[in-house]
Each structure stands twice: as C-alpha cells, then as structure tokens.
Length: 300
Image 1 (spheres, rainbow, N blue to C red):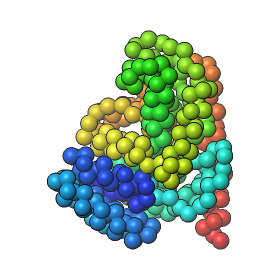
Image 2 (image 1 turned 45 degrees about the horizontal axis):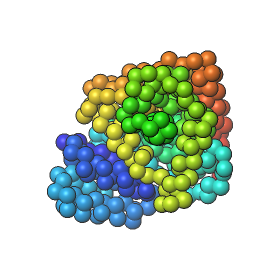
Image 3 (image 1 turned 90 degrees about the horizontal axis):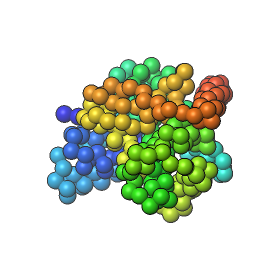
Image 4 (image 1 turned 60 degrees about the vertical axis):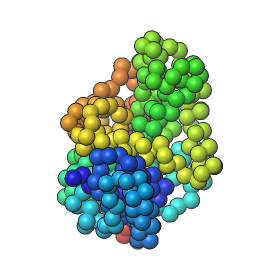
C-alpha cells in the first residue's frame, strides 16, 4: 500500500491529486491545506474521480500529524502575496512562502520518507525545508519542467519529434537557468542551439499559461508525479530535480535506481560552467539573506 500526502490544495495540488488517482501505483492520497475547506473540497472531488474512473486509489483529509504515516510527501502550498515582478518572478514569494515552508519543516521534522517540493522559489524552498526538517531525502521540482520546455521548443524549431531531442536545463529554476546547449543532441547528433531565443520563449511560457488559466499547474504536477514514482522506487529512470551541490540546492539530472539517486551532470563548456557557478552563488546569497528575514518575521 502506497500513501502520498499532498500539502496544499491549490492549482498544483489539485492536479497532482488527479494524476495520483490515475497513476495505478498510489493507493491513498492524503490532503492537507492551510485552509481546511480547500482540502475538504479536493478530497471530495478526488473521491468522485476515483469512483467514475474505477480507480482503486482513495482520497482522504489529513492534518500534518497524519502526514507522518505517508510514504512520501508533496509540498505545494502558496502563501498569500501579490506578484508584480517582471524579472525573477519566482522570487516574489521568497519571504512569504519561506515562512510557511520553514513552519512545515519544523512540524514535519522526523518524517523519513521522500519529500518533493513544488513551492517557489523552489531551489531555495527545497533547501530551507531540508535544513529545518533535518530530512536528507528532499528534492525540488523546477528544472524538470524547464528541461521539458527546452526539448519541446527546440524540437518545434527543428521540425523533429520531441523524443529526438536530448538535452538538459540545470541550475536555478528561474532567470539563471543553464541551458546545456553544448551537450544537446538531436537524433544523436550535436546541433547549433539558438540559446537566447529559446531562453526567451521558455521565459514567456509561464506568463502565457497564467494569462489564460490563472496558474501554472499541469506541467509541474506531471513532473511531481514522475519524481514520486522514481524516489519511491516504483520505476527507475532519470529526471532533473533540485538537489544539494556544494551546500546549495539547484537543478541537476539525477538517475534513480530502486529509489536511490546518482547525479549525472552532463558535459559543460566553459560558459555553461560559469553560468552554473553564477546560479549557485545567487542561490547561496539568497538563502543567507532569507534566513535572518524569517527570524525577524517570526519575532514580530
């Protein structure tokens, strides 16, 4: 029996719950939220889905204490804040989301199962949760959706199936994402990659989604469920997740075998090495600025 706990019943939490009901390997979906009414509503909706689709998965409401019985957790809550940034948009909720994630890390300390973090800025939130909770099995979603977008955009530009493209986006899930153009192949062959044009198109996609449906949800949700299957050992395979490197959490390709990860960093050219170092330095400084801010917010 496999139970997955979802903390946060917003757009991503709803999409993750629906995918887990249909996954075939998840028996129980447990839902908690900052606002109990949204958790109740999602559980009721997932119950309907299970019955209509003849799924054996069952959904139920849980509090944070009840989440300790789960095999894995998904953290996707979002604090209330207004995002009016035009650059580094995922950093807008840094302090508000940070206070919430730190609280969850304190309350869920002792949970030993894998934890997948979705809340932005995801690389910083993943590190924050890991350090506060003491958990060593924490990964963040972000670079996996960046990589999927990269492959899709390049495939369309070249007029080939997406499956023909092999390449990665690593580093920060944000403005300092590193497109690994030097190791990208199409049908097994190296190709010239219009990095700046692709970067601009990747940056535009979340805004296009938000303008149409209010919140990005399906891509991160699919990446989350794929990650859960890997970290729980349901399947073996590779995915780009935020994981620790030199004390900083940032996106890297990981290969999972029986739930155990191995870093598979691609070959990088000199420019990509510099870009990765810049992302690492920025995430380090952001984290060190955040921690005293959270202390001040908690004390006030």
